[in-house]
Amino acid sequence: MLFYSERGEGEPIVLVHGFPLDSRMWEAQIAEISGSRRLIAPDLRGFGRSSDASPFSVESLADDLHALLSDLGALPCVLGGLSMGGYVSLAYAYQYPGDLRGLMLVDTKAEGDSAEQKEGRGKMIELVRQQGSRAVAEQMLPRMLAKGTPKSRPAVAQALMSIMEACPPITIEHALLAMRDRPDQTPNLPAIAVPTLIVVGDADAITPVSVAQSMQKQIPRAQLAVIKGAGHMSPMEQPVQVNQTMARFLDGGC
Ligand code: MLT
Image (cartoon, rainbow, N blue to C red; front, top):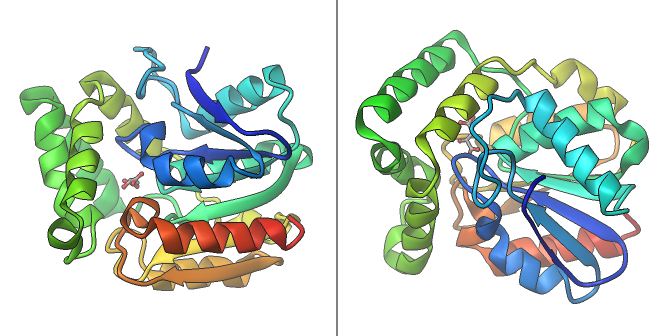
């Protein structure tokens, strides 16, 4: 059973965290969106309070999510995911198209890993095995935030660091393997029939604006919002802009 935060009433909106994070990354969105809707933010298998040492794939994480939402009577839903959470959301959109009302793809992409990225996953597995989660968090932090964020919003950098270093090493290892081996979702994008919001930080170094633009072109009902002054963690770095963007999308008939 997955841990999840749930707040508010009405149309179910589900937010899926990135790697190596948990549902706490959505704190600002949970507070805002739950004012008018039923907001559910799970910790994926092995992450946060969903303690579990069993291996998983991106597709099985989508199955876990669907089972949870079915138990909660929260289907169909609007599903949003950041980065790895976006990989899971795209897998869900492919596996469960009938249980989806809308999609929010945040700082993420549809392509699978390149050969170089696959090699990088292997190196990170070595790092977490030898030096633990903190070393992985330290390596990732500078690439996750816009250059100015650690200075302008030190609390965001601290919160991000503390979530990442709390992620169990075995979960980091399983997630790296799952991301490395995930299928390319690009061929499935034209079949996504629901309204889709693509959100990307203007300084996202991991899944840049050009990647978001190309995803927008391939999803028939997609709109793109570029968040100013944000890197890969736009919902934490610029919560006001991201909340307003999501509210406009959700109010627009999603
Ligand atoms: C994430 O933010 O979830 C990860 O950076 C995704 C990835 O490593 O592909």
